[in-house]
Image: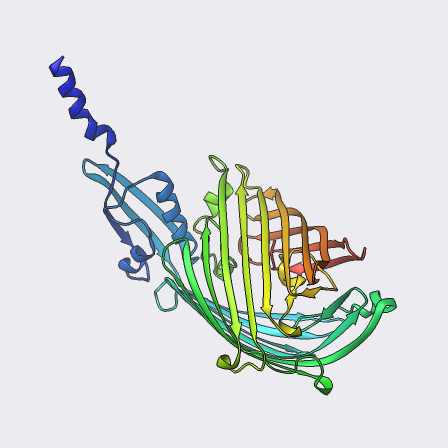
Length: 432
């Protein structure tokens, strides 16, 4: 009996122990091995689990500067050794954008990655048209992201019986007057100048904060509405886990596709991605603004990726303007999620929204992905007291994305559930 108890006592530390990461080494092409190891969020001495190991691998894939990535692990008595073999490359790609029709606009962009051997990505866009011009640039290096942009636009603020229409964008092409002339009440010509800087700092693989000072000036014809300075500063806190990154311009040269083979395989089990963010925006005399501005925004999303890689996404958002002139009121177009195409919007002191989409992959192969995404999105904007105005739509997008071309190309249809209008349009990029 004593021998049996002694055996159990001896087994307790063995049964309760977990494998740890003993040593991590890396072999690279351009960047220093230590630079890669700094981006690998699993560290020596930490507990080794299959889940955290896969997430650390995905963090490297998301840098999108690798042609191939190979992970080798060897179990030892005192832990697990991990060796990473990486073929990291660099890229610089220019692209030209152009649209025609009732309005004409064009632009050029320049995207680069890993030029300075830090696994960094950078982008620059300059565009212009009949409505004005815009220039934007960004850089992401490790846990730090920087953005700067300037926009000068001419636009029309149009008023209808049950909504408003603004078109302040270089590529804004909607001509709503043809469809809604019967309820048209009037319009005001405006000019907008906007200069924005933003800095984001990640403190872990899921948590980050950002600060965004923004100079904004509106000039309305005859000085109506809220002409003047609308400068603000915004602060945000974000949590994001297993949320897919955006464009991969390096794919044009076959770079950043290190997880392509893995992405074509079925998942062993369904996985979930989560996003939550809270933002506070303020402005007043201390920012140079001619108006007092205070706005709070909370939004979140949950993504379920099934074994066959089909995606179910649920979105929610709430915004409240405690102090805001007309140009800074809550807009239903900001509450929605970019899935539909609409002419009109609502403005008010606050609002809430929810949306759902399902991405069904009709085809997945080594060339590209063909998908169908039906969606529904709905928003309420409070216009004073207990009254509110709805803004909702339902539709679908059929798109195809080549692995070697990062922007999905497709056709999208939206039915506005409030005024019954339909929009069918060609789309490239965007939220597919």
